[in-house]
Image (tube, rainbow, N blue to C red; front, side, top):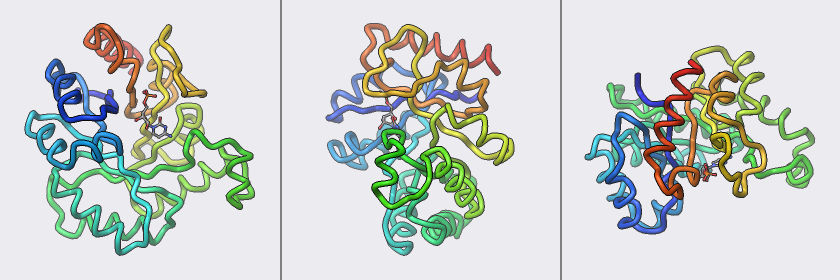
Length: 234
Ligand code: C5P
């Protein structure tokens, strides 16, 4: 079974990231490259990781006019990433443009395209300050429907929202969830956290875990523990 664990490679240099990755196997995890590593180490970093056989989730949350997002998605697909994302709040037209850009020349390596709904750091009050007259969880469900209608493969969401989203969106829509903490590990700045077991039981497809692994004394032991939990919960 392909791994459901995506490790967030939040490192500030190529050397740090590659030293960490040297102990990992593509059978045990996928890797997420976000802003910090991409800006510090460039797109060559992504190529180095795919050459080692890892599935890469390029987490750059594109949000711009449809033509620009379509072009950057096409460029990102050239890096042979497994998955990439856009912001759902960029609108249906932007998401459709991104999807069509990736599927123009259909081939087996077309990356999965998912959307970020409401950032988990946003409170209801902060969301309303932006002019959205809904609770964050209502807005997540609303955006999720738009994402699915635009043809995308899935959504980044908090595990707390997974049960309702799974019911509304069916079994084939991917739910990708950060804020996962193995029992007993520190929450850091994440406020709404869930264990791997609970997240899988709630219908989550992929777990994004950063610091509980990257800052662990024994990262491999944490990876094995999470993979065993996921295996038991499926
Ligand atoms: O270290 P930690 O497990 O908290 O890392 C979670 C990762 O998921 C980070 O790379 C963070 O940027 C990302 N993320 C998140 N919440 C979101 C979207 C992405 O924590 N809503």
